[in-house]
Image (tube, rainbow, N blue to C red; front, side, top):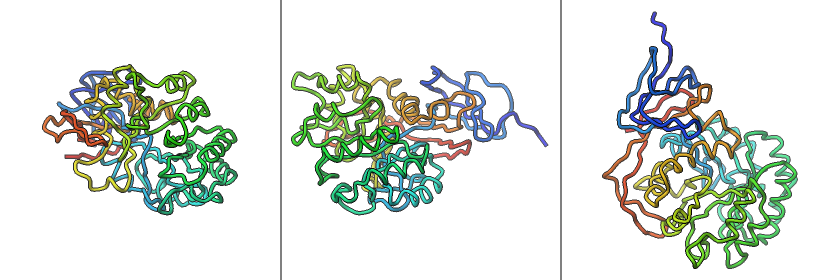
Length: 378
């Protein structure tokens, strides 16, 4: 019987790890579920080797705002089919479960999936179990139940989801945010916050209430939501919030990514802290598919530097989730989560949620490795 030094070696024409500064051709070696080496030249033998000479190898992609749920959520999608298959190995759920259905969510979705899942628990105890706004009944906003669920969930519950837009909140948005902040203070957790329509409540007044570590999502919306002022610059209240440590997630979804806004933000040197998809049930079966590699491609086409794009789906969201050193990195000893992408230069045009297009190539997934187990795509 032959003894092998590694269980799996993945070679690629380019390997990038923004956590360590690695950038160039090389190999990643895996034993069991851990990375043991990531370097330009690798010695030793492997039980299995995969070669991607034109591939881009990154740490497994991290999506900070989406809807993984096998059951119990009106927005939920099967995480292993909709995320892992497309290159995302770690995903944060935006409010798919609340205190009432948290135990079932943990059992069915978190424990029942290969994808690594964390939850931003909904302040509504119903989560997204029912169609319609999750904040439509005052009795559903139960801060005590929310805090108890967070204590029970431990590290699996990252924070609290509070989307107070008109689509999600029929209650007083000021009251909902106040309750969300109370639960957050009681548990030491951050918020994943969807802003109220600025016609109802100004962006400045909302951001003033948020704390360092809270994450504002949907930041590249257009029209009344725009973070770009009439002078073409980032709104001063947005810059002030960032200076205080408030974080900004560029979530795509069905309504929340405008090339015009993103291009103006990048021209002003303002990059989001994270890039996410808001992938949910309405995206299933879409052509072209709505996934994180295609969303990354849109940010590249809008002028965001490539290396910054990689950081916003790797090391940065890992840090925000409290998972640095475990994911979002190719450091030896970290979990063996990898994604290999290849650029399709003949892809269909990239389109935003305002139906504006940009020419550009698109990254597509060729290999996903989750905890040392490989799955080839295409």
